Image (cartoon, rainbow, N blue to C red; front, side, top):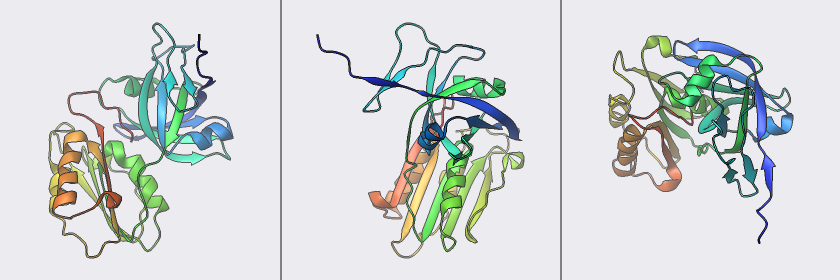
Length: 258
């Protein structure tokens, strides 16, 4: 009988602080070892236990990154998020949770208190790349990634960041290079995923001149498909000039990478 491939334990982090950033966004700072924090992002495979579970049955991870789940009921859910900030020196990872819906991650985040445990199974890139002109487009689930991309952009970067949120109360401080315009799109009472605000806003933009440009898009899947079609068609962007990913799907619990 062939022995099963070796696995490693997941990295367990604990809640250090929680902050209500907007009416629907809760920022949670997680504490862990410098090695665990360095590995937790930018995109995180987050393992969320049931609310109030004092001893989650965590999975393990194979060398190739595949998760090995324990047999039987374990109550742990896998979700993808973006680390808004990582500081290995301080042992901190900062994640913004959108509290829409009743999914396992939103429920856990809404109830999380200092000392609560969550685990990380791995990390990955955001899919962005530097360019002289940037288009960033997303909803509230993409705000951590957009914030991170803008913070790392060169001061000379030009472009536009389009962010769809529920209303003005959901706007957050979003520092950007002087040449990048930040535009907030308000749903004003419409549920997430039912408006075409993001696609309409991109459709209203003129394609910038030149080829030193990059578009990064993340939101509800149907909205992302519409924007991606515009970028590939009217803008003529090649694969290396854009990254578009559906962070969640209308009719399902929001489980963003944002």
